Length: 612
Image (cartoon, rainbow, N blue to C red; front, side, top):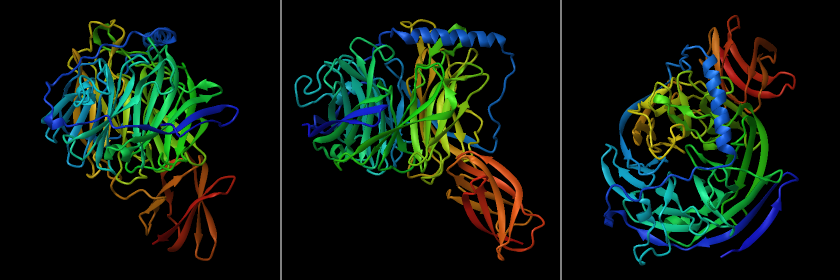
């Protein structure tokens, strides 16, 4: 049922449409414990090789990279040496091989340590020791057992692109995946668990894969949770076309998640026709809260097929679906570093791995910051690497800063991010991704970025055992991923789970449980500032969070109101910083330390300090 449809113009440059109050009835209830099935279900066939612009662009980027490699020396530069920051592996176990190409790994963990691993085309549930408890196929999950033969979900001959989430507030699970590559059979399948135990019954729904009633089908879901809603973003593609040459538009489903958990008729909004300068925005990534869920949802896009760009689209949906007045807005800014369409990654024996494009693959929100990650070409080495962006102050004056996660000896692709702090506004993160090189079999790695944007050494989680070589794909167009997954165990400090891929003829999945060593990570929940030691002797360290990049100075004001400027002058990005200030020569007593922006005189903070 459609309650409202309207078109709104944001400005001369942006527009969208929204269909409010759309409804989907419950299809059926699936009970994993009563379902018998072998480990593997339907095998997925590889997507038809896309035509159009992208193969030529891939060849162009590969040729640039090959030429650059011939000019480079054989020096090997280690990743940023931050030995005091150390992700470590607690445990690892096989997630089993997939029956699709690529794996399309995703993972979630509940408070009891049960792990759900989804990949093409199966779902697996493990306990915390890595013991396999249950497996079932995506097609069986979506089939209505009460109707013959397929019920409301006909022609589930090609399920693909599964995602799984654990809702830390509802203590429930959500699974999303796709079926069909024509407008006539395309569907988005959504399952909501009825308890925290994923082996108990699930409420299953079918959303149309052609919701705007044209000749497009839905592809590549990215999912995230808000405090009231499930967000699913999709790319609409033309019939008989692929994701590179058939793109028409991106859409956003805003789904009332409590309806799904309770097995009610599913209420949802559809946001579509999302354009900038009259051109559809390609691939949109929602940003889920890293520690807690937020009432408003930010979603990020870039220009994924450009050879070089710095544009960042910031979409925002304010208000829940149930409120009836959810609103969409769009801002467009430029990041401080460029991204670009990546070349292929290298493998031994002359094989290469496709890195798709530079779309935003994962995003999380930590307080007033949004971390996002994408594949990119490094502007100097021309290697495929990870683009780690941080969006500061998205609700006010947004500013995007980025770093390249790269290594001279390895190619990287397909990142996923998890919050690494214990407090909702701690901006530290863990980032997992795939690695490979002409000398290194494909595997999975992870890196830690602390609150000061310092990166740990790169930890190789799983080493590959062979190249990835599918006989039905060309030697230079092998597939090694579309996405991976990582999640913090929400009720336990210092524990994360990730799933990645490694080469073993084809692609195998590997699940790891991680911990993290960083003396400052758990020293204190991050606030607007922290001053230590206090009382101070010869020096004091000040941790502060600022919203605006600029040049800052510090001054001391004694109890008589007399101000003394310190010699230190700091050029700071928006974000969290640790400053060291010289207090030697100061008389004993109480001071107020003031940090202010040079030029404007705007105060970033005032802190009470005692000098002994």
